[in-house]
Length: 82
Image (cartoon, rainbow, N blue to C red; front, top):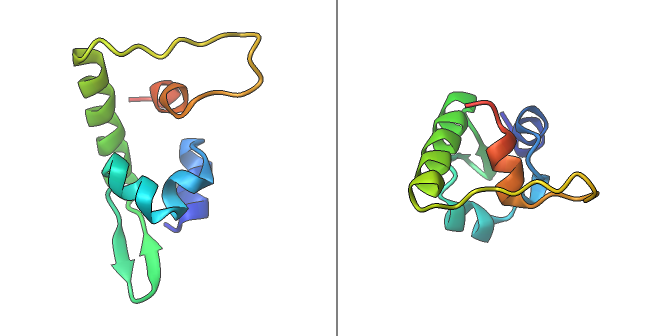
């Protein structure tokens, strides 16, 4: 899947998958196919599960404010079905 597709199916912001620094900082699994960056859905979902578990173990909980129009990356990751 390309960045736009994985962003759509995970409902995470596109920049998380398109910006190299963000991908590397978060440890998002990806593959380079010549000049293209590709993502495997199952690997990304496994990464989300690991991220969620690590955040929970560290006592990090995504607080969701119903009045907020925007959500943080942490809230978006926490909202994914795991």
